[in-house]
Length: 106
Image 1 (cartoon, helix red, strand yellow):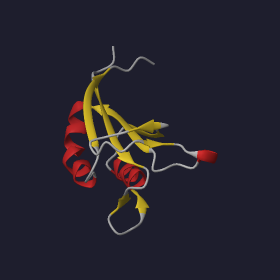
Image 2 (cartoon, rainbow, N blue to C red):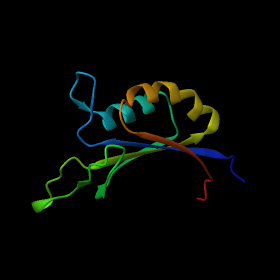
Image 3 (cartoon, rainbow, N blue to C red):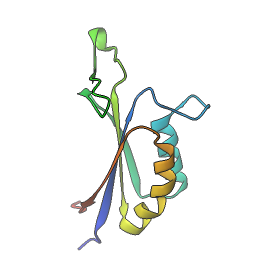
Image 4 (tube, one colour):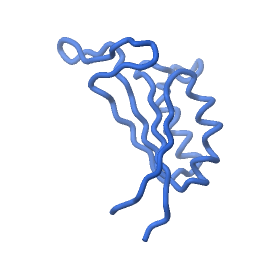
C-alpha cells in the first residue's frame, strides 16, 4: 500500500505573469516546485471556464484564446505539500488553490 498523498490544484489565467519578469506564472510556479523537490506537477490549459470575476474564458475563432484558464496539479506527501504552500500561495495573487486527498493507483 502506498502512503497517502495530497493533490494541490492551482487555478490561474494563461496571461498571468510572475512579477516583472514577464515569465508566465504557471511556468514560474512549476520551476519553483521543481527547485523545492516536489514529486510531480503538471500544467493543463482549460477549454472554457470562469472564476470569481465571472468573466468567461474560452477559445475563440481560429483557436485564439481570450486568456484560457490554466490548472497546475501538484502531487506529493502531505508534509511536503503543506511545507511549500506558503511560498506558492504568495506567488498566486489571483486564482484559486485547492488541497485534496489523493491515492496513488499505479
